[in-house]
Image (cartoon, rainbow, N blue to C red; front, side, top):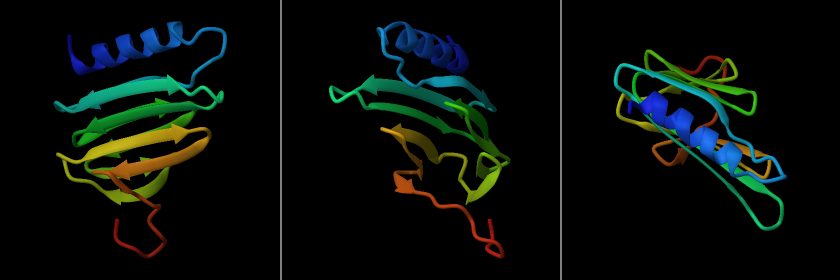
Length: 119
């Protein structure tokens, strides 16, 4: 099973296991050029939820709850906003915890690139 098929399978399992309350999940994940994908989702006891999608590679796309994360030729964007460059072997994680959204590169929170900065 390739990475895209595995991610789709995992997303479907999470959606079916969600019970009566919906748990946010990646709606689609795409990679090109041998990238890898991991998608996970859990629900906390307090009714809050967590969804996380991780990718690596030179080109990848993750759509999570309406947000669009893309790596194109090593450039990282979230909903069209530049978050700088990433290495091909870097791991990019998009995490939503109880509505708080974070984009991490190799475990470090990544912020948008300001106008005039290299990225």
